[in-house]
Length: 238
Image: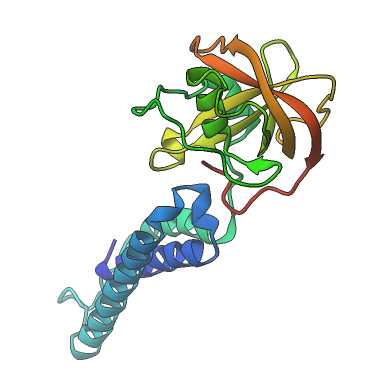
């Protein structure tokens, strides 16, 4: 593969990174805090590609690419197949990890370094992430949750007992290391949305603690007061 074709692929790849970052598509792959680094990386790829293309075209106008026998050198066309995955990145937005991934991996829940939990955010209900709720419910015994209504959002996944659970994928860096945080749904109110549907749940602390059969980790439960289906958020991962 010639340097010119390599530069074209680099140009497309850099452009795909910039487009994915500007349009928030990158949130399907990595955490939001990596946006500046992706923009810089994409810009450097584009700049390098443009300089290489300019140099190659300039050289081509001053030198004849001939092998001395009247035949021009031809690069193997198979190298251009490298453009296909780049075009896929440009044209296709992959779905976020969802119910299937949550069912295959154990819930991620680790004891906090500091045992003192700050007060919940103001408001009724108080907005809180699934990971924060589960941590308070399991490791704080629900002390910081008692007497408050909380609001959480996530996608529906099926629990080991066949009942729906609320889940969200937690990223350390990128989607490749994503692990689910799962919260069981307790109470008389039944969440009957289909798996992978995004829902918003208002509820109160439940003392019930289950076990994830995948990794035997504790699973917190919330007593559901009300729920509604919502559209998938721009940032689907925690």
